Amino acid sequence: MDTRIEKIYAAADYIKKMIGDRKPVAGIVLGSGLGKLADKIGNPILVPYKDIPHFPASTAVGHKGNFIAGKLGGKFVVAMQGRFHYYEGYTMEYVTLPIRVMKVLGIEHLFVSNAAGGVNFGFKIGDLMIIKDHINLLPNPLIGPNMEEFGPRFPDMTRPYSPQLIAAAKEIAAQEGIELKEGTYLASTGPTYETPAEYKYFRTIGADAVGMSTIPEVIVARHSSIPVFGISVITNEAHDDYAPDYENDGDDVVRAANAAAEKMNLLFERIIGQL
Image 1 (cartoon, rainbow, N blue to C red):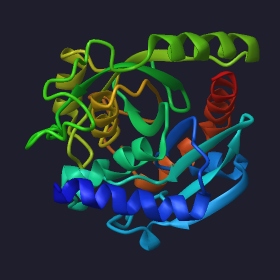
Image 2 (spheres, rainbow, N blue to C red):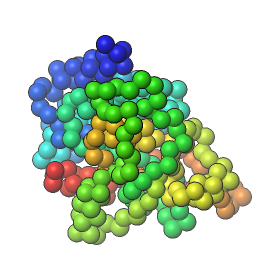
Image 3 (cartoon, rainbow, N blue to C red):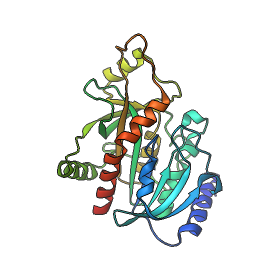
Image 4 (cartoon, rainbow, N blue to C red):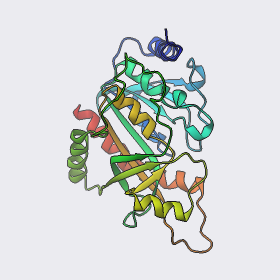
């Protein structure tokens, strides 16, 4: 057997021993400062990444490093309290390993979140942006021999983010009085924050928000035909007209994400409740 697939099934089998035969309706990936949604999961089963075979350690700021299973919105879900990044030194195989593990566990939908810089001049800190499309400047996680049992060699990416889930989010946001932005997310390798010239370039090619994650997970989910819903929390202004003394700060990013997390948590919980 392909050693990559052996690792996926070894990790999934370990988690199955913890959660039993229950099939999660959704998988959730929680980005920097956004792990508090895990506190809303009822009757949680917590599995530290360090205990799961072949799972890397999460070293990013604001990522706790736990795999959690339980009830959210009345449905059984699994969630990652922190993700893995290419900039941490992990290959794309390991960055995306948890998504394929979730697929083996039986998820039917994937929810992803991240803290992102607002390239769009109309965005301000604390805004929530529905991801409607993306621009990938990271290595594509499907490079290499195709895992035929997960999906085709050339998967379609015409609609990487589910129009149905986006519509549901907009309806719930209108009911709850939550303002939503909508735009294109761009991912670069990091770990440096981008230069003003790079932000200007990203805006020119159509990006509204920029970060260092998420897209590899989405590509792997779509490879397996899993519908995806994604939200970026705008945690800093990714502009090219800064004051002379301005600096991007990772701790500020986490604080801004925490401040906006409750609105995102409500959206995720309500959408999942409708699945």
